[in-house]
Image (cartoon, rainbow, N blue to C red):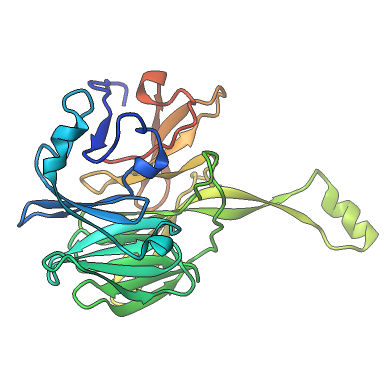
Length: 324
């Protein structure tokens, strides 16, 4: 870990993003889905518009190289997922290219599942999950599509026909709160191991904290029940894929079985060899610094290394994401 060196620091922007409003959330990209056969990339924007672009070096580029007017030729077509008054008010979470149907499936937090036919370029509302969708992910082998629903279940579907295969209740209930940056919610995040056998769920849970020392004894003397203060805490939980769906495998924790404090949302990823899980934690040393920490497959916290200000760990308050 001591030999890690920052080689390059650059920002990449999708071809439809305006220079003047690069920091605007409305110009960010929610998700990218790739059709490797046709060489097309599908960009889902927060406004509910799906862009089809040539999936080559011009899809993502260094922000200092070309102008927006020169990039428009890379956009093959675009389509709103729903009527404007509907799609613009939705919070879109993900997009997945499903090869067998040759469609792009887009999902919204309010539960809408919209498919876009890549040939006819028509969007249709496939269905609705009434409880909403907190997160969605397609397994690496593209045989399982998983929704984390508002009913706090892991809903497993077959991508070929979107038939429900299994539904697993979460091991512990989640809470969805507003994040520190703007009005965006702190959605849970899913990350698959490369072979598709394990799924990590990084979510915000309620942590029960006792209020004050010796309060239990005092409350007992008063003949009342002990009160507990609830607070939110990001937690890593590992699920194993089996014939009965996704089953709880391990909890991210220290060797003494205490939970790991200070984790950040939307920052979790498996190592390429599947041996470790990486997450981002606020440094205990203070000053708003961050560090990357590792969990073993059994959930035990393993090692860590600090992020410097140049790495993005200087406490700027921005969102951190991991890709290993």
